[in-house]
Length: 130
Figure 1: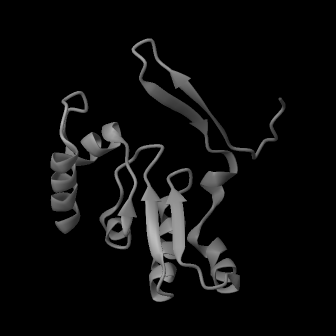
Figure 2: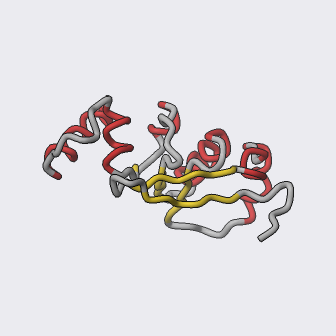
């Protein structure tokens, strides 16, 4: 497969210990800026949900989530590939979709330690309330 100079792509791997990991080349995704959204957001219809992942920079996500909230829509953030979400973005995120290792990184915990769903929920609720 030949990919153009501006194409982004990713591939998933399974490590010898059965853990999943991903390698990604962002390509054109890193070129997207908040200014690119101004015309696009206004041309959208009334949406109930806006979803974003960290394949792009945070500024366009923040702009689109703020716009979504102004329109009464809900927002979902999947901070993958992992990086710590900015506080401003966290405040306009209704649902934070993380896996176990991302949740551990978010909370500064060891990802190998077993925790109950109730404990994860409690820890994440405390983080959100900060």
